[in-house]
Structures are given as C-alpha cells and as structure tokens.
Image (cartoon, rainbow, N blue to C red):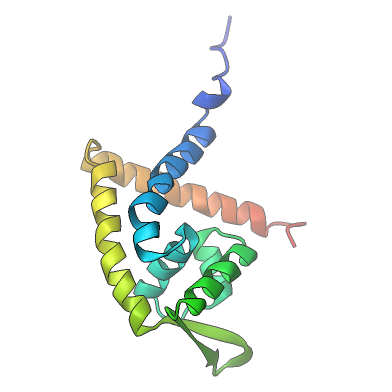
Length: 155
C-alpha cells in the first residue's frame, strides 16, 4: 500500500495562503499607497479604526495579526500625517484609545472604496458558497492560531 506523495513545498496550503496574501497586498503600494502616502500596515490599522473607533494598540495588534512594533510604527505614521488622534482611556490612564482624525476619515473613505473594488476583482471567479466556506475555514484557522499563541510558554 503506497500513500500519495507529499505535496511539494509550493503546493502546501500554508504557502498558498501566504502567497495569496502577498499577491493581493503587493499591488497596494502601487495602486493606493503612493496616491495616499500610506503603508499597508497603516491602511490595515485605519481600516479597523474606521469601523471600530476607540480600539487600543493591543486590540489592533490582535485584530490585524501584526506584532506590537508593526502596529506602533503604523500608528506613529498615521499620527505624523495627522490622520489619528489618541485619547487617554478613562478606565486605564496607561492606555490610549485610538480614533481617526477628520483627515484620517477622509483618506479612509477614499481607500475603502478602492479596497472593496480590489476585493470584488479578487473574488470575481469564486462562487458565493465557496466564499462562505473559505470565510468559515479562515475563522477556524484564526481561532486555532490564537489558541496556539495563547497556550503555555507563549508569554
């Protein structure tokens, strides 16, 4: 009894997932980043703050999957460009709540349209039920990774 050969490295699900992320993120700088003087991580941060104002940097790191230093750099860039306001958290003065400024909201409104167009292009050849299945699978993967990183010795 012979088993099927192991997939080559480039055919593994993990590497395909990384490749999709890279191939979809790469055009960002050419299409959007230059036009709005915005890095990809600044956009990821803005996208969340646009829909969930008042998040903390720690929450942004968790929701984006970026490390705290990458979030910190993105926030610093947004603040330099006057696209972000920090407000002291009334329940914990060591923590800031983050909000888009008027300038940040204006950029967000423009870029979110471009992002939705890009998403529509990306998923144009994928059926609705396949997208639902992909969404559910990605949620399971995120939950699994969170369990792994929150486990013993992750500290």
